[in-house]
Structure formats: structure tokens, C-alpha cells
Length: 396
Ligand code: SF4
Ligand code: SF4
Image (cartoon, rainbow, N blue to C red; front, side):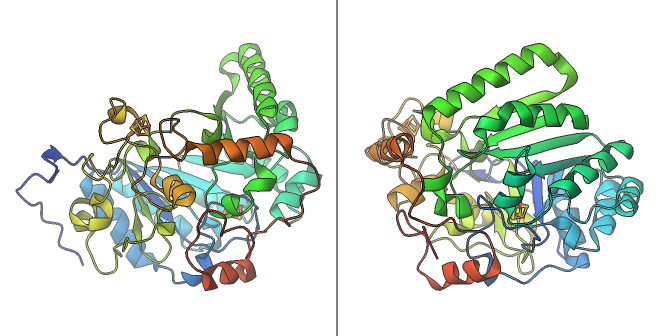
């Protein structure tokens, strides 16, 4: 067991107190029955196929709660593939976490929903790929649309608050009204319309998925109209893709400030796509305590504060607002994770973002480059190649 005694010195970085993690994401497994073209798991996930066992996960939950983590997401891959999920939820409940299950719905039977309710699960986030069977099943490379519809009804029958999540891109943006109608019919309390973030598998499929500016404008107008019509009946979140912005997002609300992700094999990550970054060794909970990882590890301290920044961020008067943006995006587009996120129009690399957006608007169908589905064979091919780079992560 790990030593949980509280150290006396207040942990600091660059003279500023390090806040405790608030949000713990437990990625229980990279296994998943679906093959989504925008999957946020690492493209080389097949290399990391070890999984923590039940006792190890319980130890992680206990340690993170000791540090102050309050929100807990059970995610994956598909967390329902773990048959100890109910045990972990019950333990989390005992520890006082607010728990959320992030799922594709595959495997969520009436029996399991009953067991999860009894274990004290608070919330369920169910993902759909589209409002049509054809596109849902194409994008996930499975026949799962009808099953997901049945699962949505079961979730409501068990009286869980439900977030419906749909990742948006060029293919399904024209269906946005129907996606909102679907969420309303299912009784979802929240609808998360998250435009694709271009990391991992989505980065590999960026040329196919990137929407046009007109598609986004139309979709936003439709979302606005629905918001006015439906009021509080369903809260709709619409996240604009950063490629269409001129300032980057405050990624993860700051590196090592709020978010602690634990990958299936126990690697601790300051953001779930951080594994793609070169030059960082991510500590593992099987070897190092969560406290030491959070406060002392190089991986969690590397991009805390402002000392790591290069120009133009270093002397920028907006650096406290966006903290220089996303390190993974900086790496994928400029090959240096310490650069300004090139979404920023002050970045000397901003032209790369403009080029991608321009190409999306002038693109002729069909694409020559085939779409890459997330699956073990493709993942092994990605793993065999050098680390992902701009222009180098397109087809395995
Ligand atoms: S995005 Fe799709 S393939 Fe990836 S973990 Fe989620 S459901 Fe599975
Ligand atoms: S230069 Fe850096 S800190 Fe300034 S706005 Fe752009 S990304 Fe943010």
C-alpha cells in the first residue's frame, strides 16, 4: 500500500501553490467494440494493452480522493468491458466521489444498469455518432444504432441523469437539427455537441472530418434557435473547433491544475492525449504514489506555470487567459510542444491552421486518402511507425 501521510511543506511550482486535482478520469481499458474514426484513444493504444486490476484501481481512487479529487469519470475504450465496473463504482461512492460513466452503451443491459444504480452511479454519458443509422454505423464501423436507442430508453427507465454526446464533423453537421430532436425524444438532460478535436485518430482522419466554415455557421444558428425554443428542457453545449478560432482554448484548464487521467496500464497523464508528446516519461501508479506524481513528477510539472513558454507566449499579455493553448496541438502542428498553440493568430505557425481550414472549404469529394478506422491492426501499424507528426499520421 502507498504511504498516504500528508507532507508538511506546501507543494509549489515557480513559487505558486499547486492546486489539488479535482477531476479524475479513470480510463479502465483501451478495449472497445466500436471503431470510431475520431476516437480519442492514442493511435498506438495496442502497445499499451496491460490493465490495472481491481485492487490497483481501488488504491488509485483512494489516493486521488485523499488529494482532493471530487469528480470521477469511468471511461475507456468501453468501461463496460470491465466486469469489476460495479465494484469500482461502489468503492468510488463510498469514498465520496461524484461518478460519471462515459460509454458507447454497448453492454449496458437492464441488469447492469440496476447493479450500477445500486452501486451508487450518479450520471451516464452516452455517445451517438449520428441521428441516422446509416452514418452512426458507418462512423463506428459497427451495427449499433438500434442498440444505442434501446440503451438510451433503459438509462431513462432506471432514472439516471443522461448526457447525450455526439462528436461533430463534416459528415454529421448537416444533421444537427435531427440530432437535437433525437436527444429531446430520448429525454436527455444535456446534449454535448462537441466538434471534433484533432488528436489521435481524428488527426489521422482530419482531411475527411474537417468541416467548412459555412457548415459551422449554419449549425450554430440551428443550435441557437433550438436553445430559444426548448429553454431548460435540455441544456445544449456546442463546442466550436479550435481551427476556426484565433485564440486557443485554455487546454485542460491548465496543465496539472485540475485534471488527472490514469490510463488503463496505470500511466498518469495531465491530459488524455498527452501520451503522444515526445520527451516526457509518464509516471505509473504501480510504481509511484498519486501524490508524488501530481506534485513532484517532471511530467506534471513540465508545462505548469509560465517558465516553459517560448515567444510569442512568454511576453504575451494574454498568457494568463489561455496559458499558451494546447501542448498536444502545438506538437502535432509544429513538432515542438513548447510552442504557442498554432490556433493563435500570433503564432508564427498559424498559417498551418489556415491551410487546413482553406483545404476543407475547397475540398472536392471523394477524398483520395482512405478513412482510417480505429482497430487493433491499424493501431499496431501506427505503433510500428515513428511518433506521430504533422503530415506523418495520416494512414498507418
Ligand atoms: S470514441 Fe468510439 S472507438 Fe473510441 S473509445 Fe469511444 S466508442 Fe470506443
Ligand atoms: S501568443 Fe501564446 S499566450 Fe498569447 S494569445 Fe497566443 S497562445 Fe495565448
